[in-house]
Length: 449
Image (cartoon, rainbow, N blue to C red; front, side, top):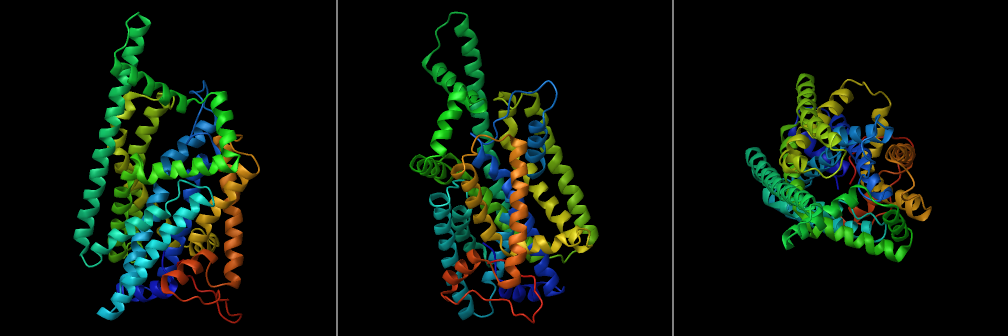
């Protein structure tokens, strides 16, 4: 999903006047934050009946509500966005080769890598039972990036804007349609209570509303049935396949535009040196403050409206949420880029920078490892549906700890992670033994494959 240290080092020297070691380390830390942060959004889908089923608004705010609001406002979407930016940056690195012969070889390797990611995505849902995986999506969208490898930064930015604006219009239109259907259903239910028989269209709207309400507040029977499905392998695999197809080929497949848009932005930011620490501390401070200010303003408004509605289906929220989702997500993602780069540059996180860098070097291994660990916990050990939202966030922190320790210890012995080694071997057709770290050499920060 990312690039090797040799490739990153070569392109880093070409693109910016800062030390190769520092620049690679910045990318690793950003990637480490992204791969750990993305678990906060994935684990509720893995461990709960639906994405984030919360009880009705409590008389006094509960811990689940507070933690969910924090996760949904500050982290949701932004971590995936950061991960995607870095993929775009890796594309620029991998295809930057002097001369037509080397460039042709790089294109061949890049195409192989994209199709390998597609296969890893299939394995992630079929073997590791995580249908929300992003590797398949990255592999497909990565192919489209080839058309942009030689264009200038202005084209990248305009193309990204076009993709995200199109997605916003599409999502907004779909949300407005659902809002209209919900209003129709609510009016029909009221009329039905008064003795009027609903029309065929109203009947469909009423059924759609009932499904929305059921997903927002699953019954005890819903929970029992879901538990049975997700704790028996044949039905669990069928659920994973169906959900994966919905994400990648159904109504949510339009998010390829989101992935493509963020990849193009990542390409532009890498070329400009933003992702590699080339700019001043003042720039990254401005990026952090401005990004969080705009992103949290949009996200906070959405959270407040959803809170007032009790996180229940509400036509007023549905009607405009889709239009502004990316408007909040992109600035928040850039805010994280600014914040992480700034605190890393000034050493404000101390030894944690080395830990995050190690996690980032093993990004693909850790991403797949999250699927493995959560499948064991929730499906193998039967914890599915038994933990509240705040408890799931606690489990995520425990997984962070395990992966952090594993990453640091692994890199003391080996040059790269097992999944990184596999992807690199397939990409370059070189099945060498997993390289060990020389006892006399100092560990060099390097981006994961």
